[in-house]
Length: 172
Image (cartoon, helix red, strand yellow):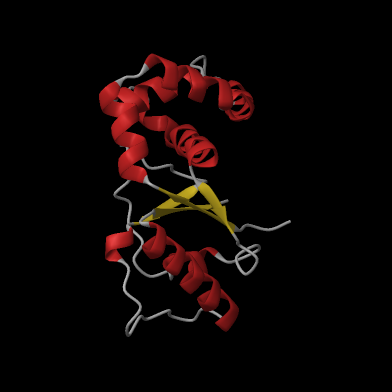
């Protein structure tokens, strides 16, 4: 088994403005319920690292933008992915699993301007975002990516632009 990329499209403005600003208890409860599988995995990672904090508390810190554990970037990143799983769309990654981290880093228009602030992981997952307004398909430098990878990226871009969604990419 190797490393690969997982990609989600998401209306980040809608999702995170609601989560951060409206503080809707019903929505928070629904997200907490739908994230139970992810919480279990993340809590096991935290416990194996000797941490007593729970994923549920870390998620509430993210939503309130009151991050208290700068060394837990990986846990916050996996929580971001959990939100993507329940509020976004999974996009095909056939040409991206497995893939090399250098290929992942060659994907044009990526940034770390996440819709919600958290410390960057010092290990996995690597997380990039592509805002749909940053995407253009003229004269794009795809570096050394394969034709299959480029074709799949272009399908992600088309999906993002047509549906007015941003892309969140996870590498692990």
